[in-house]
Image 1 (tube, rainbow over the protein chains, first blue to last red):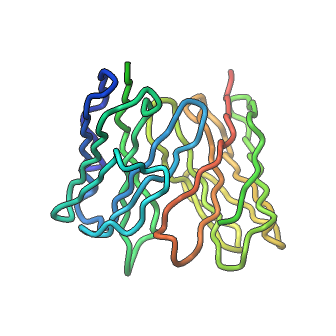
Image 2: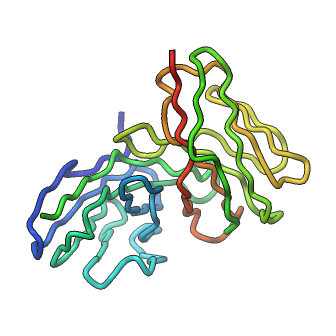
Image 3: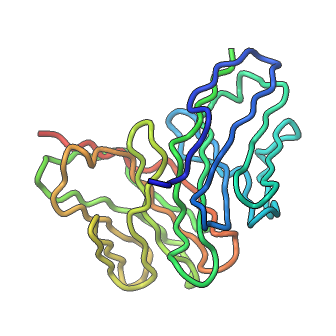
Length: 116
Length: 112
C-alpha cells in the first residue's frame, strides 16, 4: 500500500530542542497539507503546498515552524525551540488537484510530538 | 467556510443503522458537504461527499435536505469497527486550496 507515510510516528523531546517531521505523500498527488491535532479537538490546518510552492499558511504556523517541499514530492515540517504547547499530533495529507478525482484528502497516521 | 454543528456523541447497537446528523445552515451554493471519520490513533479517512443530491457508496449514504441546511450520514449496518469520530465539513467547490476545516465531530460508539 503506497498511502501517505509519516516519520517518525512518535517523538519525545525536551523543551527548546528542534524537531523535524517528514511526510511522503501518495506519489502522483500534487497537493500536500499539514495539520495539527490536540487531544479532543479536530485537526487544525497549518499549511499546504501545490507541487513545491507553499500556497497558504495558517496564522497558527508561528515563525518557529517551517515547512518545505523542495522537489514537489516529500515534505518536512520543522519546529524550532519547541515549547510544551507544541505537543500534538502532526498530520500530513495529500490530494490530487486538477482534472480528475474528488479532491479528497488522504491522511497519514500522524507524528505524535511530546515536549517535556 | 460555513460552520457545521454536530452532536458531540452518539451510541449505536451493532448491526443497526447509525444516523449521524449535521447542521450547516449557512452553507452557500458553491459548497460541498464532506464526511470524514477518524478511528482512534489514526489519520482521518474520507467517507463520502455531496452537493445537492443524495449519495451512496460502499461505506455510507449521505442524505442532504432540499434546502441544503442539514445532512445525515447513514451507516446502514454499523459494526464495532465503525466506532470513531465523524466529522461533517463544508468546503468550497473551488478555491480555498481544497483544505478541510474540521470541527470537533461526533464520537460514535458502536456497542454489542
